[in-house]
Amino acid sequence: MNRVEQAGKGNAPRSAAGVMEQIAGRVGCSKSTVSRVLSGKGKNFSVRPELREAILRTADELEYRPNPFLQMMRSRESKIIAVFDPVRDASETIREAKESFIRRIRSSGYVATGSYLLERYRVEEYTVPFPIAGALLFNISDPAFLAFFERKEIPYAVVNGLHLDRGVGVQVDERHSAALIIGALAERGHEHVAYYAVHSDFGDPRQHYSGALRERELREELQRHGIWLPEEVTGMEEASAELFLRRSVLENGATAVVCYDHVRAEEIAYAAWKLGLRIPGDISVVSFSDNPTLRRMTPPVSACSFSGGEMGEVAARTLLECLNGESGVCSRIYKVRATLVERGSIAAAKEKRSLLEN
Image (cartoon, rainbow, N blue to C red; front, side, top):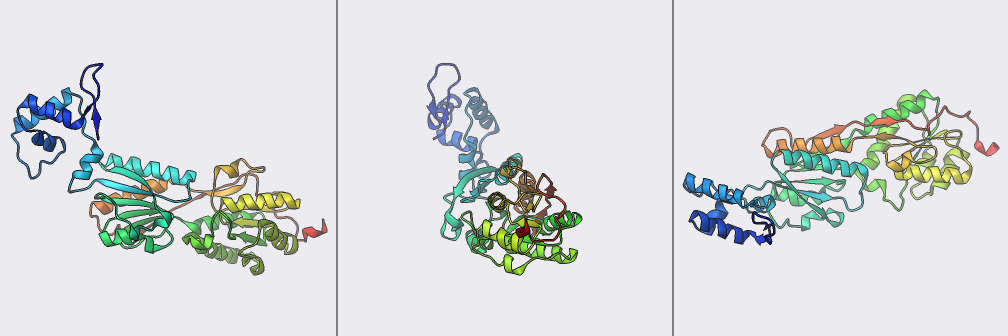
């Protein structure tokens, strides 16, 4: 229950009901009238202007502020936006996106509530316990998880994931990222590049929409630059990073490794150290996604970095446009472009020879 303090020092907190009763006594009306005025329910309820003013003035004198969340819960026109957190991903990018999203919707008169941790987003089996105007979700790769919002016709935004008819999607422009990565490697003379995106304890890229998308965009860029991607290495679904480097670098002569994400980049860097491969002396390493851990490695690993804040801002802006009934907004995908942050892991390609000779 909302707790308020009476004006004056030393007074113990009183319940909202108690304060409303006190206001009713002072202005000479029923407690229900006070409750309706303070909760903003004035559309279908008439009250004399002077009485309304007296109630608001007395509430201000007693420093009573109705709980805005409860007000919205009781309102027929919900101003609540539910935030559904990803189960596993607590990355810096996700945190930035949430903070930016919440700031924007609050400035437009909405309240964010959550955060809900739904196992694998089984929202088609879930019912939100109060009316919501919209929702924010992350990392949705299976559209079936959006059935609840589609069925209830609730607008929603998905950051870094897929969406259906009622939603807007905010994704990284993977084609642009692939162009940045391969462009940087091509400039340094790399003609044989390996791609590391195998399954690990931190998840399977094939289970995320970006898994197939990144590989497809990468292949197109490699083809455009005439760079070879060894098929016998790319298909190693369960290979360890160490085995991957043995096959791709030591046996097949790859001079650079592109990693699906920062987790795989860390695995490759550790495996390279175990095998005595120098980064970037023997191999260059670059990641499709950035993380603070890559900045602290020796050497720091180059990566595509995109703004979580920008993604959250775009998600909020487009969701608000949907809520305002603007046509052509819902069901669209909005792309956010990354920048390639070059650190110490990319260098000119080593001469084409097997490192087994060293």
